[in-house]
Image (cartoon, rainbow over all chains, first blue to last red; front, side, top):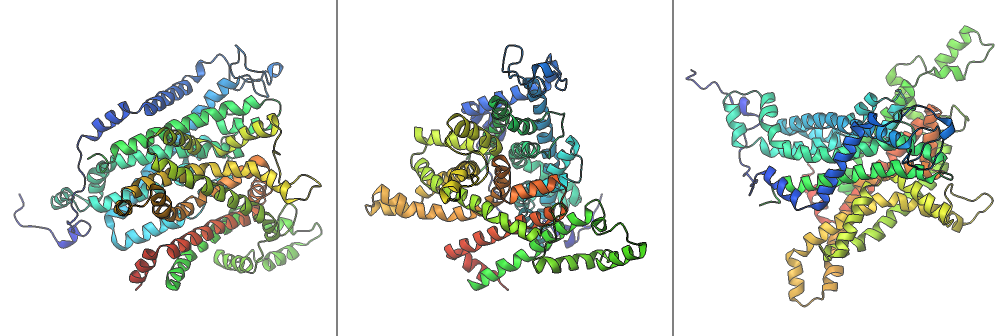
Length: 305
Length: 321
């Protein structure tokens, strides 16, 4: 057992000002709150149902009797029928099957790129907020600079140097969309690091990195969750815009944006080809936006006193 | 005020340097040797080496960057590898179409969203509010390229009301013709911003109506109409300037996508065809001009905000050391 106090003021350099009052108060636990607002919100129920349906159908896409790549020129540009509910495309491939496989690309890119951007953003934001002072000012200034450059453009230009694949799409989108999460987590860390529990952990000799990972990040889960849910919608929009312009996943793989790009050629003869993939994108993003709004309202401690 | 503008302009300098460096890196990292475009079949190796030296290809990275920056500052962005025309001239030709499209759509967004947002805010949770709020959800979620295609199908093909592509009918040279071509692209480009602005104005109207000055005005006998249009609206309009600044990036990106859907002859189509052809000098010029456009837009938005809101000026005045 230690008897003397081995602490120096430097040990507390990042956490010493303990003046901020705790402005959080929960009338109910966040989870209960979420349940309640979900029950009261029919839109959110519909959105969740839709999203699960889209996920499930993308997962079960291989059960379709058609192969998404098999050409069938005799059946090309067929109108919707009992055999082909969405018709076929210009190479005779079943359009519904292609749309379901396209959903896999969008959802995988959306989810995984958000994993990257959330991790990078949280790390950047918490470190910046925790260290504070000059370092924080410079780190935030860097974000201001990055934000004032059109990210989409950079992604397009960078993509010209790669052969686009799911992996490069995930990496590039993830690496260019972390600034929002970083700003949010940084602002919260600034107030969190002055709380007693951080001070106590520091007094017990817990390292700075461990404090960030074990004590600060768990307290940010709500905010990170909300930010991530918005990001998924944005990432999916980004992926389909890239595919639409021809910088996304390459043919013959199916993606919603790529199918729409192809549909542009046949817009005069087969306008329906332009309708189906777009509805898939719209419904996915709409449900994600509705759910993230509900999540934000339910998890915001200041709104539910 | 002058001090505030000066500070704000100073802040853009590191951003511009970073953008310039990135654009320069595109050229540097581009596969292929620039020299390939200059070598003639009957040149000797010595002549090629001399050319390499003359073109500055043996210089260090920083020397190259400064040489390049100097020529950019004098307005020379290089020449296209495809059609050998000056990049600066090509971009200058395309800017009016893009800026016109962005300006028109921004104007449309504001003209539509301000009354809608005020209407929703003053009729919170009534049917009209619910309808508009649902529509604004859809407006935020709809991919612009798809909306463009649907509008082309409906208005150009089925109803045959509006042209579906380009900016002018061949052989026709009238403003009315350009406006007709611009209607659909403008609507598509404005949709996302209109939805975002409407939601924002609705929320800030609701917040403003709970302020004490509204009670005061009411106590003095001001009519609800006067309260909304005379007091609340003024306070709701100011943050829109910031909101426009924040959404400029979407506007720039959006205009490129919309241009590609409608074959609008702006910077976006120029950049996209350059990217497809791997025409690196044009890609570089396009990237740099788009970034500059965004930086300039943000700068104007910030300065306007400072001009309109006296608190900003004071805040900066006391910060300056």
